[in-house]
Image (cartoon, rainbow, N blue to C red; front, top):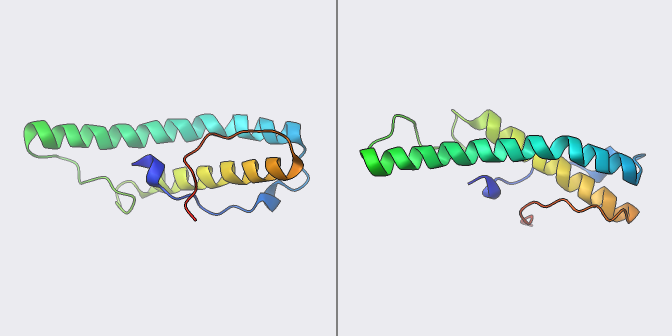
Length: 107
């Protein structure tokens, strides 16, 4: 599932020089793309499960993070997730009070 995709590590230092307002703008710019990708991946997984459960077969290969068919979407989601975590970390460092709602990171 999309929430299980681990973020690509992005250093908060990529946002060095950003002030709180700029971090908020950056989050607002990236978050809709993240949510759209998340929804797209979730729909593909759901559609595949429906075909498997009701038709007994699927014309699509199973969708997994390692699926060669979908690697671009998974990689892009992981990258965006990493950027949003970095924005959150930089915001925390600057005490901006910005909240990015994402699944908790696994350490």
